[in-house]
Image (tube, rainbow, N blue to C red):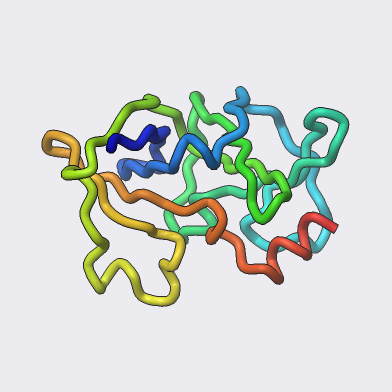
Length: 146
């Protein structure tokens, strides 16, 4: 059975998440800064008459941060709450065949990287498939959505 994923970039790395975890892709909207928010929270935006926290995935994943002209906000569900994931660019929505999905090697699945579900091989590309429900801990989610 094929899986439909959305593939996006952070720096030179490609990541994917299941399309069923995605509610919408937004063009970049400058978030309003929130004092004393966790380091990876860019701020909040108004989204469908609610306040949507924006998570900078590069900061969350401890990657160098550069500003991208093509950045997008991927609105995902996280434990029945919406959060926006700031990514450098969205590349494509595509079907992935089951045989192109591999279990993550141990080095990738250490506790810190629990949000990496598996690895997708597509031609010569290696794409880390993330579980958007696990990007934030329960504590982090409560801090930014209450």
